Length: 222
Image (cartoon, rainbow, N blue to C red):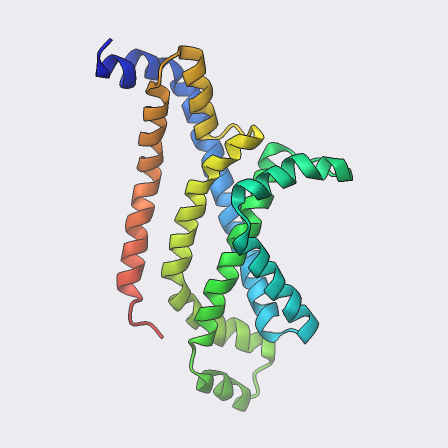
């Protein structure tokens, strides 16, 4: 059996293509839910850390530090396998969203904190001088400027967490990697893994280029 028959077996790939396609949609759904949900939570955690009362700020700092330090794989195992012993049972998809979202939100909080702190203090002082309420200052003055600064690193983190969705296979989440692994076992051929790698490239490579675009566009943003 030559290299092409072993790793690029077209007959095998065509046969297991529906399995891989299902895995792609599950992976995209997991990535989208994690990025949107984790992004919103991360911004809220950032605002709590910067502007809330001191005890809440300490909690926000602890949240960010813990979930930036803990490996995603460990968190996945804890959420999926340990929580049932406490009476909390989550599906594999929900467990993956929770674990990935906790990590992603902690990184998002740090990215936006850096973006907000990079805004000149005069911007906030001008808003206060105009008598703008705090919530309006945050929504209309601070966050739009912080977003421009945060977009490149936030996009990069989004790509990274999209790749990390492959770890969800350890909790039986039928993502692209899990489907490819099952297909490999069914066909006794590694071609499904090669096909999965190509599929990852198809939807992640444009995202990587998007990161570079944002870095160039907002390099001089303040």
